[in-house]
Length: 261
Ligand SMILES: [Fe+2]
Image 1 (cartoon, rainbow, N blue to C red):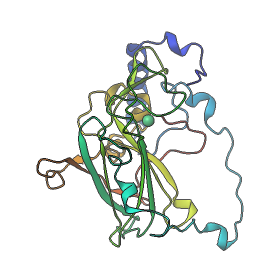
Image 2: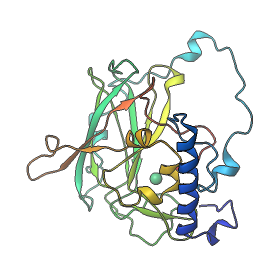
Image 3: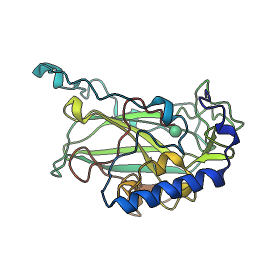
Image 4: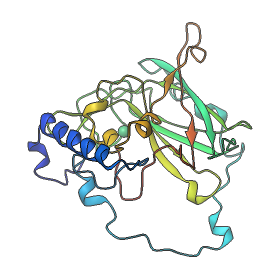
C-alpha cells in the first residue's frame, strides 16, 4: 500500500492506543450519540488526507437516476455464493457459513438485492498486487463472492474464515479479521460498503478503523454472532450478521474518500 503519512511508521501501538482512548473519552463527554465512522480520525493516519473537506454538492437527480442497477437470477449464479468451490482444490482454513438478513429501517426485507463480499484468505493475504506481506497465497481461494437476497432479504455465503493481517498505519499494526460487504439496496442513497467482524477479536481495541466508529453500540453492529444453528455437522461453522440500511439502527458504513482496508 502507499504510505501517505511518512511519520506514521514511527508511531507505536501504544501511541495509537493512547490516541484512541483520548478520542473515546472526549466522545463520551459530549453525550451526543454517533452512529457512523468519523471521516477524520487521527489514529487512522490516512483518513486525515483522504476525507472530503467540503460539503457534498446537492444535485437534483431525476427519478430514474435514483434507482439502482437491477440484478436478477440471470446475472448471478447461485454457486458464486460459495467461495470454497471456485478452484480445482479446496482452500485451506476454517470453512464457515455467513448468513443474515438485509432489512430497511422498519425491518422490512430488502429482497433480491446484490450482496458482494471480498476478503483475505485464512493467512490474512489478499489476491492483490499491493498486498505483499509474507503470508502464502492460497491457489484455491480468490476471496470474492456474491449473491442475491431471497424473498425474506436473506443472504448466505460459504467461505473460509479470513485471518488478521498487518498494514502500515503504524508499527506492528494489525487489522482484526473481517469480510468486506457491498450492497446496493433499492436506491442509490442506500448503497453501502462496510466490514463485518468476528466476535471476541482481540484486535478490536487496537484497530483505528474499527475504533473510528466511536460508539460501542454502533461498533457492535458490525460484529457477527456465532450461531450453532448455522453451524453444520462435520462441515462448517456458522455466523449470523444482519444488515440495516437505514434508520437509527443503521449498520455503520464507509463513505466516499475513505480507504478502508
Ligand atoms: Fe480488508
